[in-house]
Amino acid sequence: MAEKNVGNSPDQSRRSFLKYTGTAIGGAVVGGVIGSAISGGFTKKSTTPTPSPSASPQVQAGMDYNRAPMFFNQAQLQMTEAAAERIFPKDESGPGATELGVAFYIDHQLASPWGVNARTYRTGPFVKGEATQGDYLSIQRHELITMGLQSMEEASKSKYTKSFVELAPEEQDAILTSMEKGEINVVNGVTGKTFFNQFRVLVMEGVYSDPLYGGNKDMQGWKMRKYPGNQMSYVAIMDKDQFAAMEPRSLHDHFVH
Image (cartoon, rainbow, N blue to C red; front, side):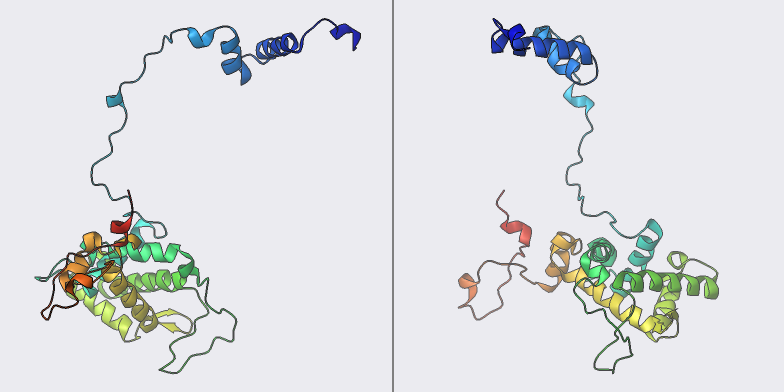
């Protein structure tokens, strides 16, 4: 075998290998790239016209790709949006939960490790705590919210023969009030009161958290409260006696583009 290769340089052997493997594999993988390169294909003009830039999909300016469900299905998202709007409705002071994107904040939280109680002690026994302790639940947070929404939907259909999102505002308020009072059961050992308390906290977080998390769209929640947001420094106003209004800043504003 060694004698047969006498007189053939390494470069010639490599060229032969590339040539014949490209021919043998053909149109599979190598033939399409290496084979065309060996035959001078890279120097030939393509007969296929290059698509014009206008043929590609246009990205809409100002599109907020953070406003998309990660956990809820469409029905759950709509119910969450409707319930959140009744807890924090739009009025003369400013936008409500719907416009602020609170439903997306809640959705993203439930899709995160927080939704599965990733950093919470989860070993029983699961007993009812004192009023000052709160509940220690055997179910995870995302289960509490989804089952609470389902119980709310069932109560709406039972009382008004309509879905929660189809109810008039005062009817939605009645269902939410029943949840708050614990008159609607969510699952064994868990009443609507537990669901409502957790849901209301999530709504308020969605209104006032940094827009990074999906709510407080355009920092409108902060602007209603004249809250400055995430400022790097207050040195310029520390000596002022009167209230100093500041344009709010989010975590995104500190990102170096």
